Image (cartoon, rainbow, N blue to C red; front, top):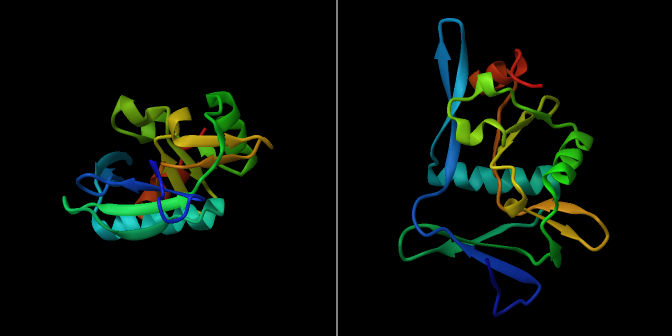
Length: 165
């Protein structure tokens, strides 16, 4: 992220290529699991909208990069990286539950994925680099992978049935 030259209260991020990742459900005879795959442009837009809705963020899509990615901006947060324990407390306090490793394919996301059963929001890439904590102790996600799993969707069914701890 870089400081916005027009509005110093915001920072900009350029996705260099692609649109990040999305969670893909795979349905198997005895259940299902989620994997990461490259996101589409509309999924990236949905991700920004979900973060704004779920966490009161104000991320805005500003345009496109020459490589075909997005330029987004967020309000600048003065602070530091919170500890993983503080992030986990923040998520649990907000109603999120850690996703069981059996619901995910790939060890690289198995300990970084959370689900909110009441809203259907799913977040992954939960690690200190992707959060900021301000001087008042407020924790804000700044670069997580997020999606909405509507009730009844394959993703929701995978997570709602023994998919959360």
